[in-house]
Amino acid sequence: MSAIGCLNTFLSYSPFFIFVKTYILNALADDTRLKLLKKISNGEICACELPAFVKKSQPAVSQHLKELRGADLVSVRRNGSRRLYSLTPKAVRILKDISRW
Image (cartoon, rainbow, N blue to C red; front, side, top):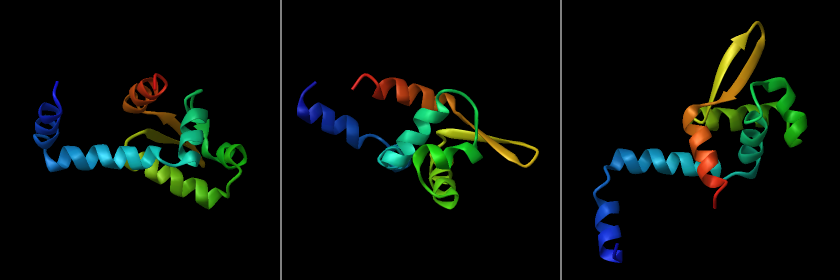
């Protein structure tokens, strides 16, 4: 496809589509969030285990997880007082694609 064809294809996307993709890319643009995704990709994990893994405070990790949830890359479920995080199907696809770069 020519450069003009690529540009026309890009411009045909709706503003909402571009916003969603930008939000996902911003969520992936942080090293800490990528480390969190890698850890969570090994299976469901308690939020209480993540600060030690990324060497960040619990409030900082909570903010990163909030960004990942907002981008629909992780899901959370409650188990008593614990919050268990896992990857969404979208995140699995994205991480698989990224691993090929």
